[in-house]
Image (tube, rainbow, N blue to C red):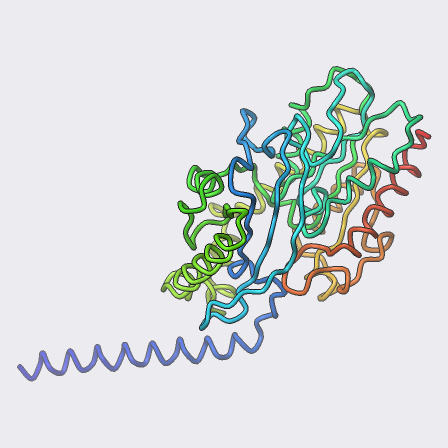
Length: 365
């Protein structure tokens, strides 16, 4: 009996010592953990209840065609009370192809195709592409197309480009990207999120994209319900582990950096191939790449390692490139306080920068 007690005591001491060491390591790493300017887990992104997105045959998605969609984004500011604050409120109009623009695509007309993520789509304010449409000279023989879709990257843009309803061979491509886009795979909406968007009562705190009734009383109650459920979800053991400094600074980099799991490195190579494919399709002289800064990059002053590799690839291949860090003059004040997207002032700078870059590069007017 003494031997069993001695063994159990030893195990208990070892367990306590291990937990104390883990706690001490967590405290030390927390001191060096860079402050994250994003709080994605606390973001609640609501769209007009109903069909909003449509998955496509090419593996990605577009918006529901010919729709007017209300987007409201809230952030949980007080988890104890599940209190939220609205970060931005905007409306989207889509054309018959499910793209965020007013005009429909004319298949036979020469085209300037803008490809990009949510910065190109214009998430965070009224989409800037509507302004570009109004500015675009009526005398131009080129139509402009907004291929900006939230959360997408280079590989998805190549597929979208290949599946646009265009017959004309006269195409120019403007790729507007941020550093994170290099490692974004092609993805589609889950059945759960699509069902939640169609019917708000099917939503829970685990959904990334949420439907919201247009009735003010119903929508207010729904926002409060989802906020409470998201707080409970974030308090789960899995999320607590993922939010720890040990996971973020040690485990995650080691896991994803090791060859069998280096998804980011593999996706970077796919992104390079996608750029090369676009250049082959339209001709190198007809492609322009514009990089915009991310909020975290403006705070740190540096690009991440994989993004630097992507830029080296652009330079080595002699692709036309505009460094938006220098040319577009975005500052932290041009971004939302909690969200990673530009605000109305930021997008005003982006539309000016993109418009001038296109005019300087292609000289089609």
